[in-house]
Length: 335
Image 1 (spheres, rainbow, N blue to C red):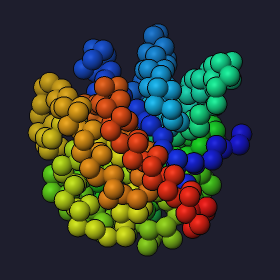
Image 2 (image 1 turned 120 degrees about the vertical axis):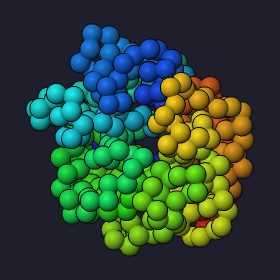
Image 3 (image 1 turned 90 degrees about the horizontal axis):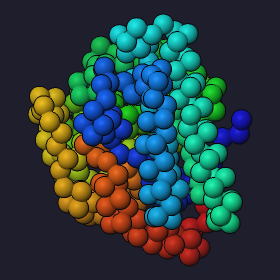
């Protein structure tokens, strides 16, 4: 199956969804042991719940006039977390494939509806979502790049073989695991996106500055990642770091921030959802976007839902479209 082109690499803005797991748990009252949304695929109404969730974001993308990046609900569908939920290797592989198949059906549905209405078919990509081997908020300091490559290659291979357009690794906290994931994706010949999380000081949970981490991954992999993202942190946590400057900012192509300004430790201890202020979050996206010349993918993470992503789209997409228009009008902007 032919992969869809990554139009975001050429500046075309795309939306993504919000916090899938926090939406399911706190807004819909669904139990997700281990925060594992992929387990819903095995429940009676689970696939329908996931389909309705993504349809609501398709509607938002239609309203915004842009395309969409769909993340498979497989952030926890790796061997360590799968085993904790009672999945063996064959069952876990089947769950990853089922997740991709569900999104393929939804994409076909959305594209068919656009054609039937005589509308342009928007770019819709399916990203195979992978997560860290351990806890995303705690750096897995014992994991080497070589171990990470061996560990993550299994899930990346299953997702790549199922027809995803790219794989995206979210909530990474240390460079070695990111390096291993990029190398594994390169071996499986699938584009890969690396998304780091940061603490309130803008540094990775490992203690490494964000800019140094991005540069280190690129140095160790020949800049093989398609681009980088930031997720699972509030924009106020990394704004100062971005304002310091550095060419590494050109490698950041997407933002999926938390709704809450709380630290990871505070969020871990919280018993209720901190939804923050969608308008305030959107304004921060808009303020930071000029610092990220290649920003193209906009979405949310923990605590965000359709309201937050809608506000982000209204506030930020006009700037991204304006930047794309300037790029295309420039003699140097045709690459």
